[in-house]
Amino acid sequence: TDNRAGYVGFVGGDMVIHTDTYSAGDIKLQTNGTERMRIDSSGSVGIANTAMSSLDAEANNLVVGSGTGDEGITIYTGSSVGHHGSIFFADGTSGTATKRGQIRYEQNNEVMSFATASTERMHIDGSGNVTINDTSTGYELSVGTDAENAGVLLSTSGIIGQVRVIKSYSGATSAVIFRYSGGASTVTVGSISYSNTSTTYNTSSDYRLKENVSYDFDA
Image 1 (cartoon, rainbow, N blue to C red):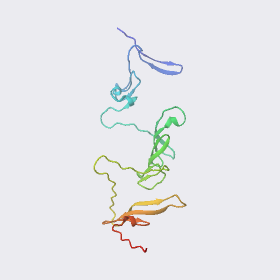
Image 2 (image 1 turned 30 degrees about the vertical axis):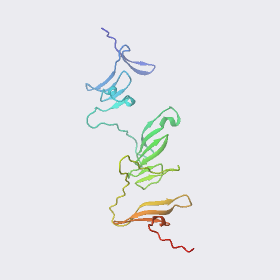
Image 3 (image 1 turned 180 degrees about the horizontal axis):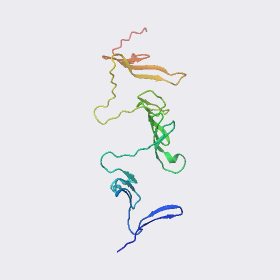
Image 4 (image 1 turned 60 degrees about the vertical axis):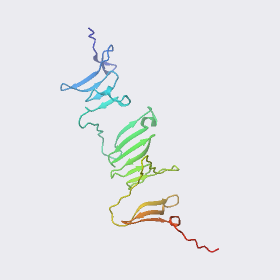
């Protein structure tokens, strides 16, 4: 019978837990007589489970949870300005490669931000306002970029693609406002407003919106 086992020791100042090199052994950590964490022979870590090898190999290096009830991970940080809870996605060990993708929560201002290519692309403030590629605040959704042909695309393979604007306020209000900000100041150049019963298109000229136009020009 092969009775070779592992050992726990110190090598060069490091604590080493060593399993038998002649078999695929796991490291099991227990408290109060119950296993709490396991490192399997491939190096995957399971906390409150041993299901690492049964889950998708693209993301089973660390598996947390028993698979029943509520489970999760909490990032516990300070609450002052600039204190973040962060998850970084890296493809290198220096410079911006250490955080190409980012999910961060800044505690003092209550802002959740998302970054790709090491640059913030979207954040959600404490009021639930969403900003994408912009620094504007105070709007439920703000989308902006310096790139040409930027905007919002609605695409569907079904029968209906819809953008709905619903209000509970009784009276007229602007649903869409068109502004030009390329000059010294931002200028409103048009809008679409609606009341309880009608919709109004406001432009510098509504000629193209008219039907059955009668031409009566002097020759």
